[in-house]
Image 1 (cartoon, rainbow, N blue to C red):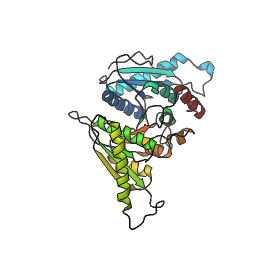
Image 2 (cartoon, one colour):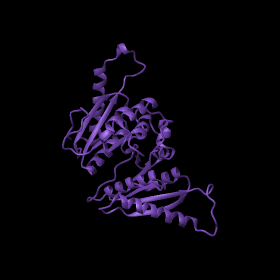
Image 3 (cartoon, rainbow, N blue to C red):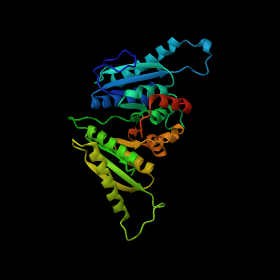
Image 4 (cartoon, rainbow, N blue to C red):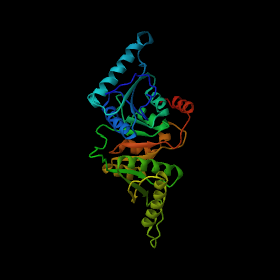
Length: 316
């Protein structure tokens, strides 16, 4: 396993950066393994990041900053050993920084193709399904964020074939189209099939008995999905596409579909509110409850300074 210098700077000649947040929790071990898998697919470098903060309950006079940094380095080293046993298949760069973990990870995401986080870290508590760090990163990073849960494993590669199903919702909007394109690219890289699910609730839709409403919804969703997927592959071969219409709220439909999926892809809200609202109710619910890894796709790219200001305001 080839570890970097810990400076946090991109390593020349190692390709795209896949950033992984590490705190020693079981979720972060799952994130490291997924980060290795993603870095291999992208032909890039795994950047393992551990941030340390000053405990608020400890008097400043008793703090020894070098000891905190050394402890963070030990956590990062032990996590890498636990995850890979010295046999990581991609180059590894290590970053240890003082600061709020979510803010540090968002900063590292500035030039990354992907950030991978555990859904909950060591600082989580039982009633919180998604930790403040993973929520903050998913809400503010300017690149896609892969949320892993303890027990999640990257799809096994056999004879160069990954397979499985990538699930995404049909949003029927410009932002939804971008999410479907991202899901299509992910499915192609995984050699998986793409399932686009259009949900509807009979409590909000008047159904004319003379009209096959489900068939109409499916036809419209298929037209949109085919157009969006084609746009993502102007010169290449797109993944096999399936479209289905399912009754129920979008979050419930996607969570149920995650039980047999290799990956679920959701879009992040474009609103500028507190972290939970910015992430979006559907994305938050899916990231918390899905049985598979969840990829959260940002609606827009926010300049680093603005993004850091938002993180400070949100207290992430």
